[in-house]
Length: 172
Ligand SMILES: C[S@@+](CC[C@H](N)C(=O)[O-])C[C@H]1O[C@@H](n2cnc3c(N)ncnc32)[C@H](O)[C@@H]1O
Image (cartoon, rainbow, N blue to C red):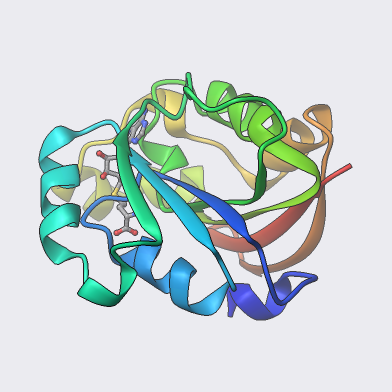
């Protein structure tokens, strides 16, 4: 669904933040015409799992690295696309991550993400079963405003009421 929301078929150099067990990185390599995917996570155990899960056909394409999405080690204006699959709501300060994503995107580069909104995270059941930092909470308007401040315009989105969003933004 996200692939269809993007404006191009190929994104040669891709970055994923919060790659977890590494499944998303393989989807990016397969579906987004990537020549190279840098897949990052702050948690070394997740990166270990991701390396174990990596299918042989993707070994030359995907590189796993430990990086904090709020202070990426990547150079400015480098990537054709950045991906975040359910990661920003885990941040102590999601705004720092948006700023970093914009910094490392090329002009015209695209930001693919899916995230839950604050009302979902505040839900009694979700709060009882999971732990998320308050700094990772936002609603649609806050998120859209922050993208705008960082020169990212929404290109396409599917919004599920005030629960979650699937979206592609493009850096101006
Ligand atoms: C809900 S998991 C999502 C994992 C993966 N994207 C997926 O869809 O399966 C959130 C991930 O974000 C990572 N994470 C949390 N804070 C982070 C940060 N500041 N920088 C990079 N990764 C972070 C966690 O270690 C975890 O792997």
